[in-house]
Length: 173
Image (cartoon, rainbow, N blue to C red; front, top):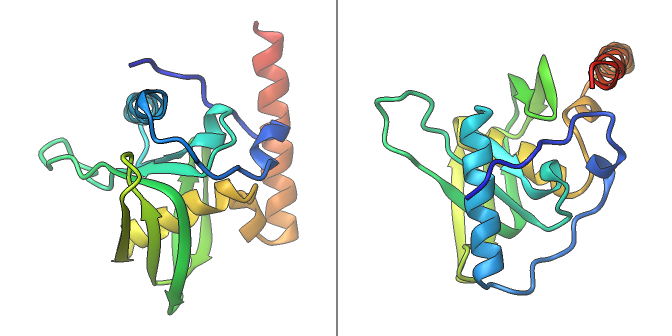
């Protein structure tokens, strides 16, 4: 397992449309393991493959947010949101937007169809943090980002802050 670098906005690779996963092999299993190690080290509750520069339709989520909770690591490959119900506003962060937390409107409950790391299909109904995380990570697969859910003014403010951060990061290298 290895910790991989997480792409930060405004990296253009975050806007790419991810390709379906077609091979369920040892290479995919290693990618999932690397993503888990990367997500836990960050730390975060979710990570999509495009966030580490891999344009595949794959994300992982673990909503166990306290150290005393058992891991609930879930892998979603080639996911499809097949039902979305209700509406909720929640403050979200994103590993590709370090330090940024914004209120985002999402569906309150979702049903998702996906495959696990072995290729086995499953359906899951989710609400609360898990439903929000599924929608957030699913957006990454389509090149949609947290800022796309914000007002034009908030989007511009976050964009400026992230461009400034990227410039400072490259100046320090």
